[in-house]
Image (cartoon, rainbow over all chains, first blue to last red; front, side, top):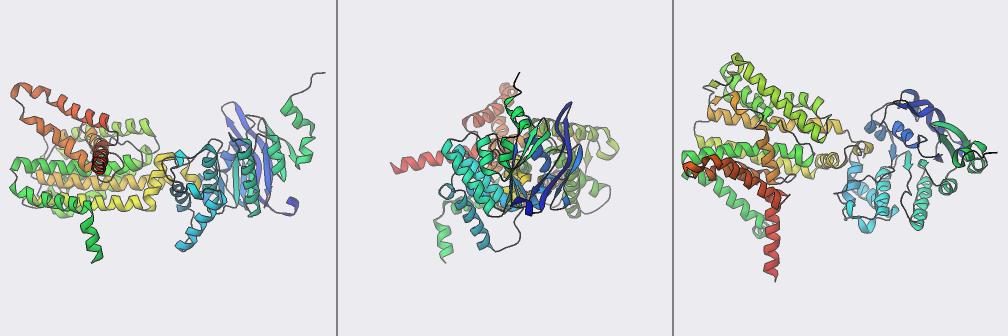
Length: 246
Length: 320
């Protein structure tokens, strides 16, 4: 299905150095509208750096990032968010002293377009329902369980219906059952029409979720294709398992 | 009618009434010394209420509140004495000038965080303090400028003027804290790096908040030095820049009423110990310091925190 859709995000020859380390190295790939694209790669392969480049946390050294045909390279983070890109973080980030509802309200303030209060209420109720946080809505975010905090992070990213959602290891630190629940949620997000790029350490998770996969190693793209193609790709296996000595 | 009945049932109504009676009646029966103390206290409270927004809501420990107090005060002094404008016109000019200076200062300083921001703003106070001393032709340096015209004749009216400003700031703070603006400031305090990912232009809100609170602090400076009719660079040293911080922290950061209680303690405590016998006066600062340390140790929530704890305790006892 992915092939028939247009690119929503285009990464072109993107590079980023930290001192002498080349974290992202002339990276080029597209994300197509409506798909779940998995970003795979060993630790330090540049996956999170790429998210930080897309969302304006870091400035790129060279290359271009285009979102819905607009150039967003080195744009400020808040402007990128206003254009419709949302993200979650590898380490849980929420406003810890605020209630779940206040967290969601804060996430809506700047992005909400003019609309009736009842519509806003419906949006909040929907996202609470979607992320199974309805019962915890008046709880202080810092008091939630790890899994609930991560669902809250997704709720905050999702509440204003972004066109592109970047999920950075949504299952980090979760138990098996919580993991499955989160994967289920990711699929439901895609079914809402939101395009997703997800970083995943866990091969099984990435394979189960993604329509397509891009594999990075040392900041470079070493493979791109459907999950079944990736599992048999020699370069990928080498990057993950190491070269077998003859 | 129901609304009135509801008001009568609320404890806060009576606290507000008591405070109003105190503020309206007490100055008429106070000695000039006590009235002067109240005017000084009110001025300190305004500066701390403004700092409270920057520190308590936004999470930036500013140590340059004194600079804006000085800018407002010198705008009043120079506009009236050098340009010959009326003190009321000068009172309108002060917050405008202070807003501009506050906004310009915000551009470099608000790029710093936590401790670095504190050190940066402290250095800013040092620089401004040095400018005031080294430009005697303009500022009068430590010899000062005399004959600043008074906004109102009567000392009591100066006090009322300050109370009016306190009420305005109180209402603005409460409205702000309940609005999207308050939520954004709290988001900045909680995780400034996260907020932009929800489309929040943190830089804009930080600068506007800093400049607006600076403007109101400047207004307090203008009122106080019009009351005093004399200004000198000695009032604006690095050391005195800690006063507003002490008032805000002792009162309880991030609460609208905190600075008012903080002001009573921080400005009031030195005066309580003033009556000590001659041999003890050297110890006065130590006693004042001890009171402040005690408040902070007893309750990180400041005076407001202590009173909330006390109310909770009394309620429990009442229930048993």
